[in-house]
Image 1 (cartoon, rainbow, N blue to C red):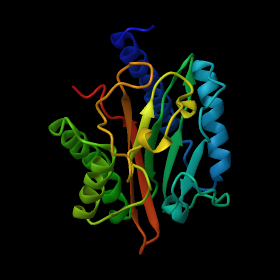
Image 2: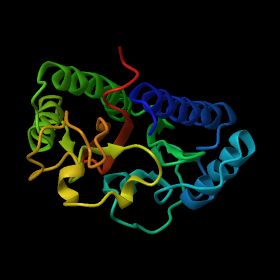
Image 3: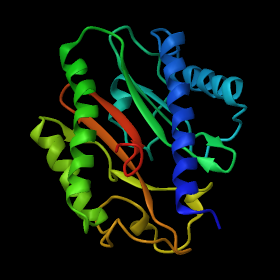
Length: 231
């Protein structure tokens, strides 16, 4: 069995590759007005293969712009052309070898101050949520979900998803057996997040921040590892 130090290192290495992928997405200007969401998704898929030989993604590839950014992961809104003043986000789960990453980033194309404020709040609220997690060693998934929602509301946003994170690990985590709710940061997830999994390994978590302004019709998304890589 992989040592805990080895597992953590491999998860961080997968995330580093995902971060490098999205740095290159920004550098090449792939999220640009006039392109369809699916077109951008395919371009990022191809870039992942070009950079890392990645051909497998453990969950559906998401690129959403404008009002489609209000939709949570499970929805499938129709493909939309990205507009010049849009906010857009990407949520990808590339698999690097036998290890999965889960990474989400937001791009603001225009000068709308509200959209830029939301984009800035994504990382600020992510950091505040991580600090809350660090300060509450016995916190459950349900308690952490409630805390993340409070942070969003205090900043003037609504929280856009039914979950605020999930377990991550060796590919594919989606097939972990057992009661699925306990593997998510969501209401009803009443076990402590700091625990061992069914194989006796430490649980590692992804944190998802999905902020929305339903009145103005836009949202944003930020996602990465919660409990690793922030020391």
